[in-house]
Image 1 (cartoon, rainbow, N blue to C red):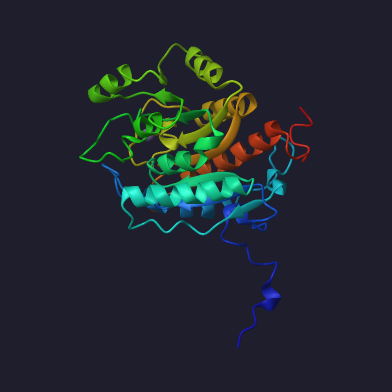
Image 2 (image 1 turned 135 degrees about the vertical axis):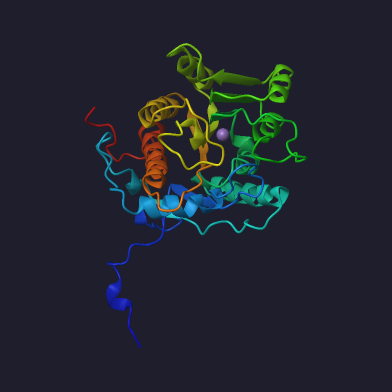
Length: 304
Ligand SMILES: [Mn+2]
């Protein structure tokens, strides 16, 4: 019999950042949603959560920009939700229940996709606590139905607009004609194209969320496809990593983020750097949340 007891302490858990605080003592709960059944072009985002978690295990918990260790707020990674074979409707229900439970327990859900559709379930679970659904996305995801589906990665913002008071979509750089028509007849949705005049688009977006309770969805295809090539629906002309981090910091500074997700990352075989980029965005977001929510005093931002 090989004894594993002596190995304790030398085993890095398969959890975000390789850290596994108890659920009870954690402020942030990482929830992987390995689902890509409605992806129209390239499926593969089912492997996103695991790739991001694996890459995150090689990231230093110290955040140089903030001068603190955000992980000290307590990170807990739950097992991936069992949704791989689910219908979109049943995946959405599973996500809704998970997010509702984490919020009821007074913690912040951090979801890793998986396709964008999961945001519908997450918003359902967070509905009573949010005023605004804000998303960074290259796409509007505003079809009323897509390929015969009402619940799909391409209809998710439209479905969410039927649930919440206000939807703000920032970073869009491609739009379907039918989406344009749908947007014109929706009065609670603001679409802010990335190609609006330099600086102006970001200001408009940030003004819109100022002081609000927000569900934040980061579709990582808002990044330029040269920065992050492994995506379900890549689109050139996007943001740099630096652009996104600067915007995210302002988002967390100005709004109260109730829950968040990072979706549509679809790992390419052999490519590791982009999984790490997504992991870094997730951890940056947790750090900014700690800095501006003021719930923990970990010394974040003290040197600034
Ligand atoms: Mn997208």
